[in-house]
Image (cartoon, rainbow, N blue to C red; front, side):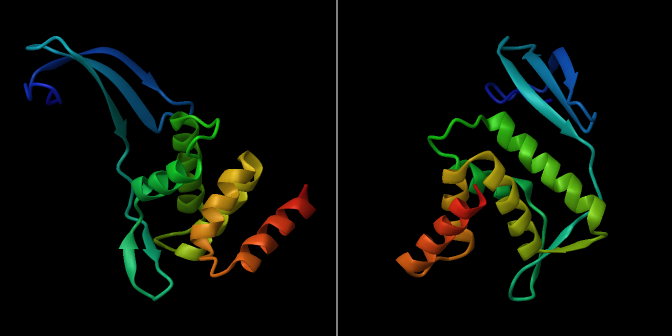
Length: 151
């Protein structure tokens, strides 16, 4: 594994841990040359999952894209990066279990919205404002009113 600090090819594994379902292995490594430590994550390479966009085009499922969107929604909220990663891992697992090779982007968005509604209402509204493309204040207010009815 190449060191991100000095680009040395040799490193040694200091610690290895798997997550609860053994789908990800976290390894703490130490560079042989500069002695700095860094973390790597190993994930089983899954079959490709294609996302069918609203316009009909297809692109490969990208968990990093979802993490970026959720990170923005949870900005300055009491949710850790690990919780976001766990949410995306759970979402990806559900999508792979329920869809063979292709999943509509609308399905992904709705599943994210359902999870956000349970975790953090502010993040839910932030994500909804982008996902549902609010055009005016009334659509924003109606989403908040729906959220209040559920509570």
